[in-house]
Image 1 (spheres, one colour):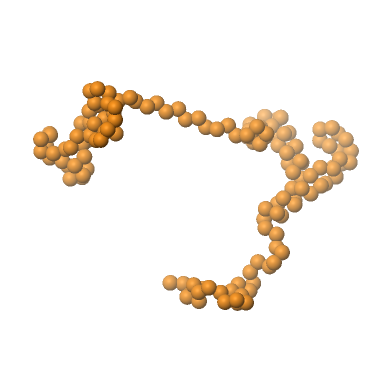
Image 2: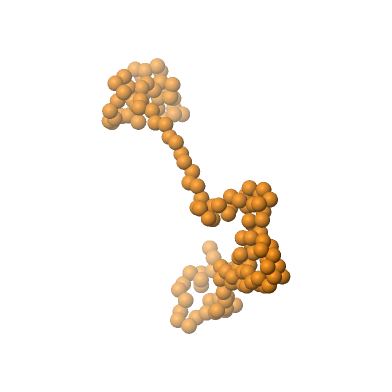
Amino acid sequence: MGNEQYLKPAKPGEIRNPKGKPKGTKNMATVIREILDTKLTLKEHPITKKAGVKMTVREMITLAMVKEAQQGNVSAYKELTDRLEGKVKDKLDLEVSQKLLTLKPFGPDDKGEPDAGNGGLLPISQLQPEADGGAGGAGEI
């Protein structure tokens, strides 16, 4: 097993990882957020052609995606619409049959002995739908 000293709780004032993450270190999400929110001055706005426009890195990336979508990049368009309107939820259509199958015990009365490999269960080919359509109950699936 591992080193047993680490299985015991640390005593007050005891430092187990002295070279660990320093206090005040920013996590990755904070660093990314700060980079994306940094304002930069553009020589010329790509759409309006206005000089000296300030934009955040986030706005520049969004603008680049819009330009890609305008040039026919379907994945860029999909990403933009998913962000704007929300993702389309997958629909799953299920068709349920009204016929219920009745399980019958498999034994010497039937066509032979149960197969040891299937735990005495009937093969699917021998399952028969109920004659009355079934209302549900014990022994039915």
